[in-house]
Length: 83
Image 1: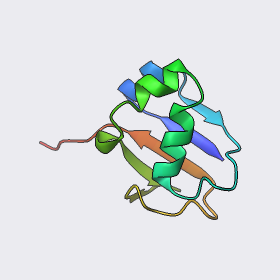
Image 2: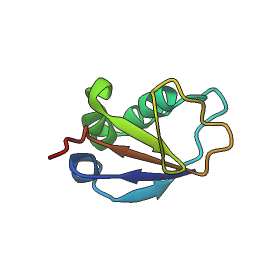
Image 3: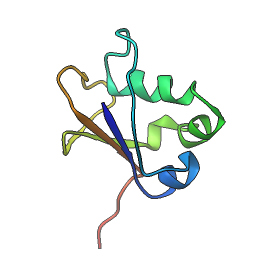
Image 4: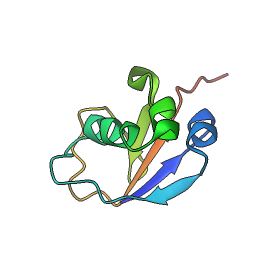
């Protein structure tokens, strides 16, 4: 699965994207965020407050409980504001 990071998440992780192969028990967006946070210090810093991190699966905004099954790409980004 391709993971994209935007804004301060990209800065904290240290890259804009990466390919990951999470274990089968990683079934939801929230599971993936927890799994990524456990990978290293940079990811832990990026996901230290998962409640404010937003996600999109295959370019569609989703909630943390959205299933990952069948998704090819996930993007993580901070909350957005309009103006």
